[in-house]
Length: 346
Image (cartoon, rainbow, N blue to C red; front, top):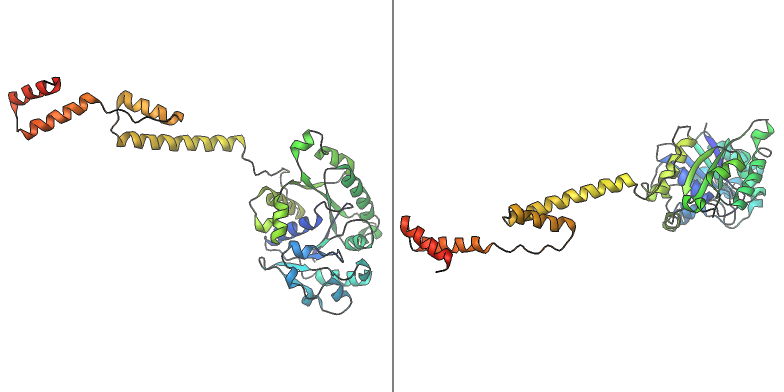
């Protein structure tokens, strides 16, 4: 049976839909069957983030009301075979969802998928409570700012009171996903630190998602960040979070696209070695030796504009004199006498 996970928060705009798509895609890329469900009736944003808005024929409400069967409403992702979307209705509000209808759809999905991920609307009203109702686990998305963390407190209370697990006396598994985190701003006191958030919410940390412009770019392209740019810091953060959600032990880090000092030094050393190789080749092509070669190499490697080394005038004169002696077919004492006279310029 598949696990049902609700991605929720009290405050809007913290990244629930982006996180639902990114986590769903990351899990599906490992070969697991994943369905993401949009519970945000009337707004319906998950299909846009998934790039499936033009493929919606039937929606969640159509299935609940019997206008379509579940397989008719499910949209298979065009990039990953094991990733599916159940879109929300754009013309009906949250009151169109019924408790029995939602329960029936979730129970039909459980045996068919490894993961059923519910994208909850913001707030604590009907849509949000229905999204968390049948969850085995919850991913609470919060920004490192006071209002978001405060609203997440309310969500934790609802998870412990209004879910099926709560009614059975069981505790729902909860994870905190901290989004839009900027370590530099936190150090300056412009946002809460990770320690501050954990102290307030006392919830296990699933992942730290760094602030990034890639979120907007991925949304505009209709592709989860874990598909569109899997090597980016943002995608790596979501992939690590997905692995922890599966139960893997993954070191908690804040991925970054910036090169560390060690990588910079390695790059600088490689660049210097390449320049040395190039300078040696040039010096060899010019037949430079001894002091002339060392001066040339020093100028090149220091970045100074290297002046073409002057040709040794004595060497050139020797070449010219030898050429003339050859043309005159001089040998022995006659050649030596001619060369002395030629080199003296007489």
